[in-house]
Image 1 (cartoon, rainbow, N blue to C red):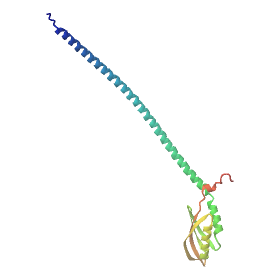
Image 2 (cartoon, rainbow, N blue to C red; image 1 turned 120 degrees about the horizontal axis):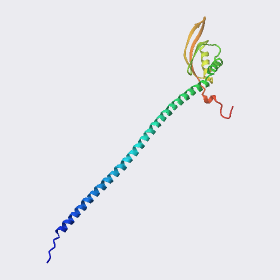
Image 3 (tube, rainbow, N blue to C red; image 1 turned 90 degrees about the vertical axis):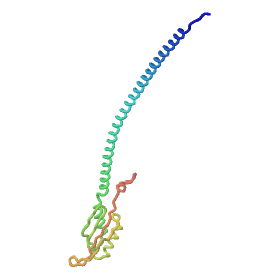
Image 4 (tube, rainbow, N blue to C red; image 1 turned 45 degrees about the vertical axis):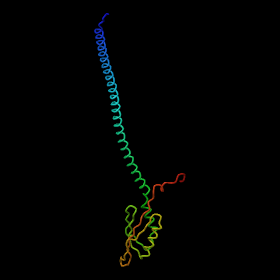
Amino acid sequence: MIRINLLPHREEKRKARRQQFYVLLGLVAVLAGLIWFLGYSIIGKQIAVQNDKNEFIKREIASLDKEIDEIKKIQEQTNALLARKRVIEALQANRTETVHLFNELAKQVPEGIYLRTLVQTGPRIAISGYAQSNARITTLMNNLDESPLLERSTLVETKAEVVANRRLNAFSITTMITRQTTAAAKPAPGKK
């Protein structure tokens, strides 16, 4: 019988397998490094792109904030101008108020009443004077309440006084003037 020694052949196969293993291990390591490098560069590129987008958004937000501030300033100016316009319209509507007030007082003051002072504070008017009797003061108050320009007459005080050797009743009345609105001052559409 012939004896064949297979030990060197097995040893060579083991060496070949070990070499293949190390080569495959090296290829896997290189492939893993390549995959890691590609992943790192792709993610880095995406982060850079996102950072650029974020910077762009921040710049746009800053410019929009400036525009919002300008809009707020313009709005404040518009509101101030509208407030001035309303004041001017109110003054325009009530510019002849004093003339109408004196005309109305001349119509409504009965005989025997002598006005001494007339003080207007906003819509409130304080009237003081002398009357021949308390009945004339009552007539004056009723006339003022019936007037289209005046309302809510209130007697503040009445007392007897002697003026130029005549016995008169001194009185003090407050009344409110009815303000005309700008809508009432403007003619209705289609009517003149």
